[in-house]
Amino acid sequence: MPEIYKITEIVGTSPVSFAEAVKVGVAEAAKTVRHMHWFEVSEMRGRIAEGKVEEFQVTLKIGFKIER
Image (tube, rainbow, N blue to C red; front, side, top):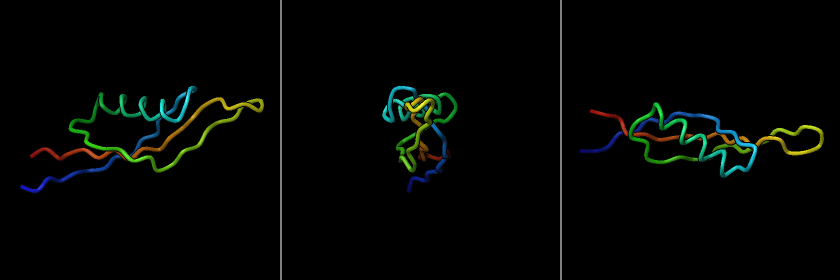
């Protein structure tokens, strides 16, 4: 039987790095989204305060399998 997936989009943030923002985003999504299979980083950006990087932000598309 073919598998069907749905995509949801979230934004993960971290004061440490882009990689950490991805991990935080996926971990938070896992609290409410079941059957996650993959993610795609569609945007990377950050926030600057007083001339320094204050926060890393990533927009993630997360694919999850539809239950039948």
